[in-house]
Amino acid sequence: MHRYQPRIHLVRLGPGQNIPVSPKELQEVEHKTFVFPETVFTAVTAYQNQLITKLKIDSNPFAKGFRDSSRLTDFDRCLRQKT
Image (cartoon, rainbow, N blue to C red; front, top):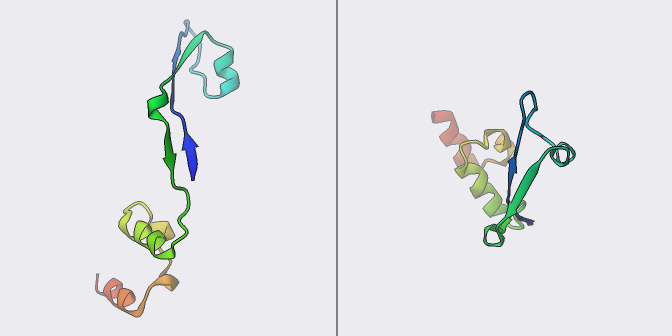
């Protein structure tokens, strides 16, 4: 699990200046950063329970690359062949 703290950066750019894309570039331009303590959140990056991991992958339409056919049960393989 990881804890995250979102930040909002307001950057004043002059003509010809590019939007900073790294912390170093941000320091080189006039800016103001706002932090709201109530927006802190913790995200789960890995699950200890393999069944939960499988459920999350199977329920996520964007996780097709994680769906390994070797993990499928005979029932799941049969369902896949029919679709």
